[in-house]
Image (cartoon, rainbow, N blue to C red; front, side, top):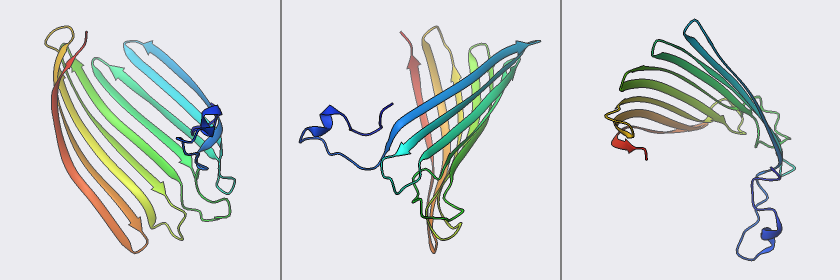
Length: 188
């Protein structure tokens, strides 16, 4: 992808603001493997993304993610890990902190028309501060249940518990809560 902002022939119009932030010459590659041996399913994948920062004073993007899952008799275990490095921090900042990464883990069960799963996500975005105490964190756990009544009709319920933390050396801001979502999924 040439860039992730508006940098083409349309960027010369007066209604679009050209932003110096973002990335150019974005290259993404991926590899996946799927197998089934003795009723045990295996899927693994890896993705890498590389790009030059539009702002020459900031570090370039060097990101990757790996993940996979195992399944057996309706039970599936899955996990992933991703790392975006210090993609938008000043090149002159020699701080060892500032990395952005995340991980997920979950388990699901499906039997006939019924399925349920629980998944946890945890992420951390570092900042160009002077210590490990400058960061943004997110923790989110989701429990979901659905039941397929007929082809194309499945009611579901999802419960999410989250906590977001923003720490700026001396002050810490927390935002936490719960969300309940219910609905009916229709496929035509």
